[in-house]
Image (cartoon, rainbow, N blue to C red; front, side, top):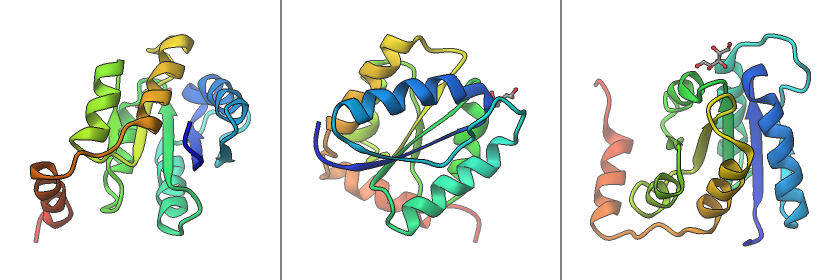
Length: 149
Ligand code: RB5
């Protein structure tokens, strides 16, 4: 895997998957920043999406991985930040396409909806796939300008 610093964050619904992926990434020689949560207490997923947005904005990590029970709530929260392109992914095709076409900087997984082996595979694809640019760059640039004015 390419040398990168990866930030991880989850609520309680993604805690187990976060531990698994931390071990997987560190085992591959990557630097991991763990933004929590770190116990099983019930917490609010927007807080961890916000922590991820801050880590990326501050340049502490190049990419991030977010998890909650389904991945839905935390992806909605993350995408409220304009510099975040968070992709909720369920399979290897989505992992590849969110990089090639959408230049996603955050991968989102459901801790209660995806098995561990699929999660590791999806993460590896996400981290090793480049953005294709070209016509996709025009579309991604439009995302930065979208929203209510
Ligand atoms: C927490 O129970 C659960 O609602 C949360 O992890 C997530 O799935 C929300 O979208």
